[in-house]
Amino acid sequence: MVDNEKTKTEHFRDWATNKKLKPGACSFEATFTDVKLSEPLVPEKTVRFSTEAPFTVCGRRRADGGKEHIEGTAVLVSPESKTIRIRAHVAKFNRDAYKIGPKYTDGWFARVQSLAKVVAEEGEIDLTLFARPSSSQHSSR
Image (cartoon, rainbow, N blue to C red):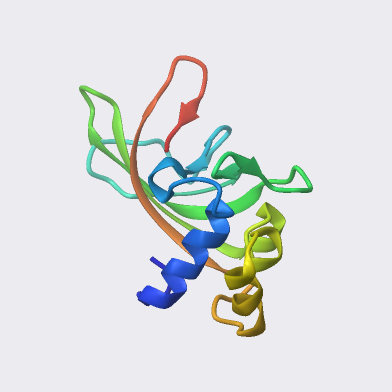
């Protein structure tokens, strides 16, 4: 959801899929490796972290191959399954770096959308997700 507004969300969805995929087939993915925790994870205690993580949006990585800076908190909610709740914040997420926008989307409607700056090129993303470490890396979708 973009700014809790239907119009902005619809525009972003059209641009993220480049109108070549169904929105349900498009995923926003981040891979967390080398996460720096402020202290070790223990059950039910919030721990701050920061990391640089690669993202993909509808299968596209950032055009320059870079990673996003992420800061947030992690809580070990289930020691048995090693389930971790992550709340993360990405400042200065640039949609153009992922080729998300009307100039990357075919059709007359995208051209009309480009005339109105409905969705900012740069914004912030807040994520809440659950993850479990894999054998080789910590990953989540």
